[in-house]
Length: 118
Image 1 (cartoon, helix red, strand yellow):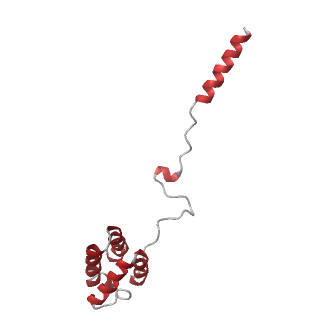
Image 2 (cartoon, rainbow, N blue to C red; image 1 turned 180 degrees about the vertical axis):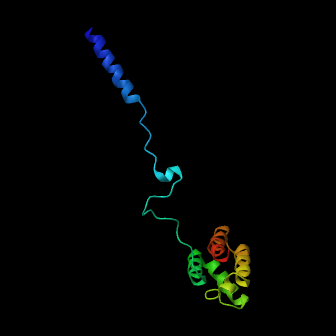
Image 3 (cartoon, rainbow, N blue to C red; image 1 turned 90 degrees about the vertical axis):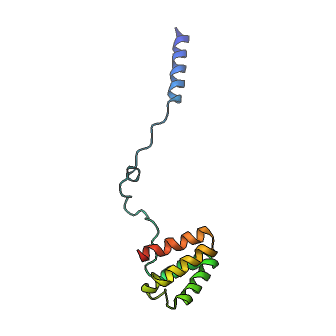
């Protein structure tokens, strides 16, 4: 009888340790709700041409060269004139980056300028 009790205890211990752990509790962000207060949101985009210029310069030299060349060919200052930034300059800089820069640089320029010009 004693060996049967020990065997049952051993089997129960093995079964208990083999049970899967319960899933972690769901967080509000897992349920599609808003993030908890104080959570960082997506990075803020540029608010004007001057901030966009700084962001473009951080992408790389190819995009910075296109920015400078496009500002000259557009005949206006995209850093201070939103009509320039979203007009002739936009067409020139996106054309330049698509023809001469990497795909990643080109997409970064578009992602930087598009929110300002939409």
